[in-house]
Image (cartoon, rainbow, N blue to C red; front, side):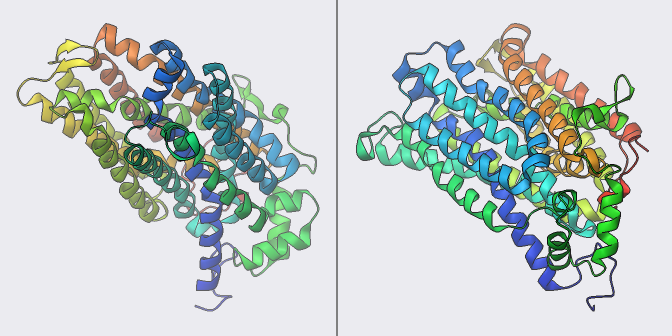
Length: 477
């Protein structure tokens, strides 16, 4: 294929494809830090509780406070990206990641640790907005879904890296609470090691090109033309720049007032984005990850096997994300999400039925007879379908569904909703499981999985293969 055979938004040579993949991977290091910083605390919680003499409730809030920081970071990220540019916001996130890792490692009290965890949350929230938005803007439409899915792949790799790092440090020190290099406990090194990928991310953010949409908005058309030509393979850059500028509607920077609309005070497409962001959490993925030890223990695994089981789950996450990368542009976003909703509902229904037969309560439960394997298969079936569909495809869709003019701030609002529901589910799950039974929570997740199918079927347009400039209408199709 020659460099002029394809349309303006098609990668027209292996050289262009190699460039855009390299840039996508560099940007997705923010996703890796997202996953790493979310999961790295898991190996340190017991030692933190012992060192600072924390009650279970204070420890739980110390862990969960990061999610509040994530929501705040997501809220501000879109506006900052439009004001400073995507690259500068990535660098700012990298600095926050590094500061959080160092500050948490040297925390002297629970309040100090909470403050640094909040800073880390701000960094994660910013990264969760800026990475999918940037990749959507830099990627050619033909490959945008697969490239945008790399962020979720990076998140899962980050989670795996955190688990592996925690286990390695704990093993080398003979326990997470034992003293290691330079007089620091191993659990402090678990947190400090996050400085390394943060520095790498900051350096990469300085090297990659700025988003064409931001450059055009800033009046830097020559730079935008170079990026469109070199990275996206656009042959007629003048025409493309004109299309992008026209899609802004107005030259001034978007504000949150532009999100107002006729549907309960907001633009209809924003409600759609917020709904899929909420549903991704309401199906229970993070509760199942955070509290998976209960499930594994109920089917006969010892607590000492928790690392092995966590690694199994994280490997499933990584492997199944490749399914989304391969199919999201071929099959389409809607079909993958619908298939995922069905698979998740079946898995969650099996787990619900199994835990309905459970003996005991809270963490001291046992599943008689065949119900243990049923719960195990159901939960892993859920993880498989989530990792192949709703995990990555939700981020792909959020990154591309909003019109150019409001993309950054709308993406920030929708992502904030995702983090708020993550926080709600994370805090609710232990209480409901203890007082109403674990089956009740799984039943609720099943209902939301069914609702996710109905919502996608009736409300979500298909964005595969469309240029971002085609999303000019604020009303869903």
